[in-house]
Amino acid sequence: MQNRKKMTRTFELLKRNLKLLVQVKKVESLLYV
Image (cartoon, rainbow, N blue to C red; front, side, top):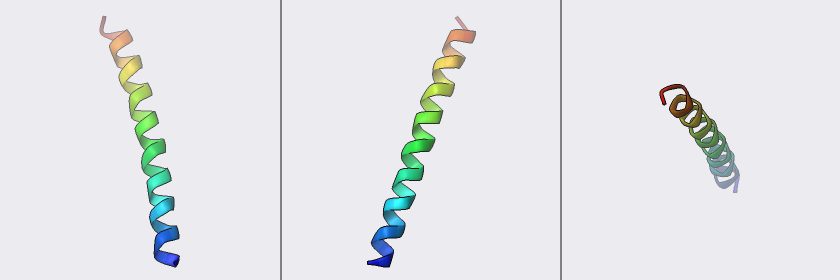
């Protein structure tokens, strides 16, 4: 059970990182147009 909780946490972190990455990509594309 503990392991599953840890995995969920990691997944949440990954999703957050993905959102950040997407935002960075958007800003970059705006800068380099």
